[in-house]
Length: 151
Image (cartoon, rainbow, N blue to C red):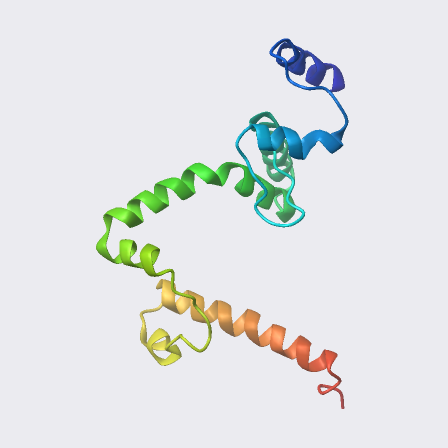
């Protein structure tokens, strides 16, 4: 495997790509136009993204229960899909308004009764089901960590 990678990277060295330890990764990413997105972010070059995508795709196909590999695949390949989604939202009046206003969704801004009245299988019903399972579970964990759920 290492021999294959060396033979794939050798032509890049002729282009003047820097050689060095993994500590150089943030600097290479910045040269490719990627800045730091958040504290501790390590930018990746297009080659690194391609290797991550290929490796995570292979592992996700080999073992679909490796949700971490599915997530890496989505993070490395989802940029184009997000651009298409954004462009579609810009064309739609309601989507453009959402992009312009950037509303925050929280439990205080949701009309839970309206979500309950939506048809089964709709996005609103599924989101309500997600909240019932996950938010209730998180509140239970917090309650138990405070020592309130014992006895």
